[in-house]
Length: 123
Image (cartoon, rainbow, N blue to C red; front, side, top):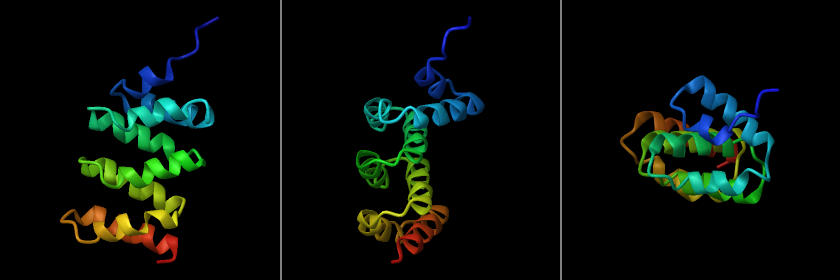
């Protein structure tokens, strides 16, 4: 019998296919996986923060919601984009002020994603 995969190692593998599989598995393991995913949103690695946000998008819990809103202020544009996509898919009125602030950014994709998320929030 093969050992169970270390989903966190898979998430950090640098291989998008493996990380996506891990993301789905970790989202299914919520709420047990949530504390570690929340820690990963603070990682020094923007790629790992991106994958943590990707996982949180599939976890419907208040702490995940808060982390997605916080990720809108991440230093990495890619992480902010991932958070905006997640918030478009699962609207959260608490995100409206942060999404409005992103409408003034220079990143055209992020601007559009923030607008889409705002529309999904009914703003």
